[in-house]
Image 1 (cartoon, rainbow, N blue to C red):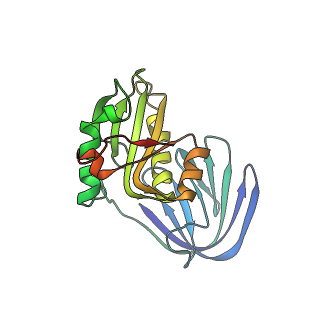
Image 2 (image 1 turned 90 degrees about the vertical axis):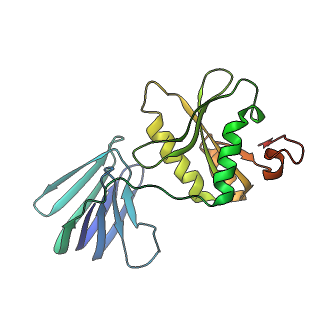
Image 3 (image 1 turned 135 degrees about the vertical axis):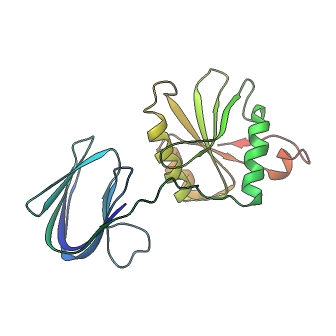
Length: 219
């Protein structure tokens, strides 16, 4: 990961246009190819960014970042205050709590609750940005990626969206559709998932353990 702190201005040219006037900012260039620009507020959210795959060209104090759609992020450097690179290695990923881990295990073992003829490819299927909870095939042989949460929020949908973007580049798996599964799914997360063509499944933990009716509710 490369960390650059610089006084800079930023212009985005794509479906819309946007301008960030000159100010000190943090620029992150990650190993996955993404570039994001941060201020000293907004928690983890960047002011602007380019998701991978994209290319970065540096010349004469101007960085030009271009994604596969041809959109551009132009960073005009006025003064570089810090520039360092750090090798972070392979991240082990988020360690799920007991309930999430058990949900994953139970659902992988009982995929028939999603439909007859569903088969498991692998739990914790590896990608360049972390493991997909469950990768499986439905009755028609289509690939399905499942992201599991105890409480389904927008961040989980965003996470699954990034996984789907990567998985759909693999010709052996594509097309891959997504299922966002949780014990509770927030309305905003459901709206975002629906907009992106991702199905939502409400999980009943007790039902999966065989304590109650073992039907899942698919919305």
